Image (cartoon, rainbow, N blue to C red):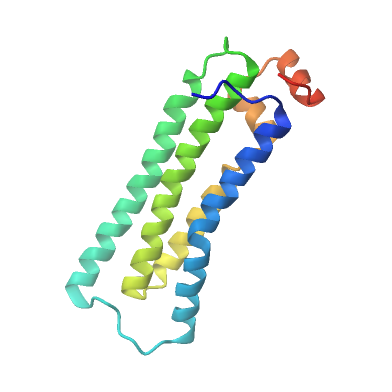
Length: 165
C-alpha cells in the first residue's frame, strides 16, 4: 500500500485524473450508441418482446443495486478513516475509497450503455445521464474532502499551504 500523498496538489491532480478517465471510459462508446439511436438506424434491436422486457428490467434493477451498493459502501467506509492517521495517509485512504465508488458507478454506466445498445431504448440513455449526474455530485473538491475527512483547522491550514505533508 502506498504511504500517502505528499501534498494537496498531488492528491487533487491524481483524483481528478482518475475521475475523468473513469468517466471517459464509457463516454465515447455511449456517444456512438446515442448517435446510432438518433440516426434511426433500421437495424432491429438485438432482442424483442418479452425477452427484451425481462432483460431490460433485470439490467435496470442491477444498475440500481450497483449504485445503491456504491453509496452504502462509501458511507460505511468513510467514517472508518482514522482521524489519528497522518494527513497524507488520510488522503490516500480517501482516494482509494473514492476510486472504488467511481468504479461501482462506472459499472452501472457500462450496464446502461450495454442495455441501450441491445434494446435501442431511450430510457437507458436517461439512466446513463443520471449516472453521470451522480458522478458530478461526488466529484472531490477541497471543501468536500475537508468536510468528509473531518480535518482539523491545523490540517486544513497544512493543505492550504500546499507544503509537503
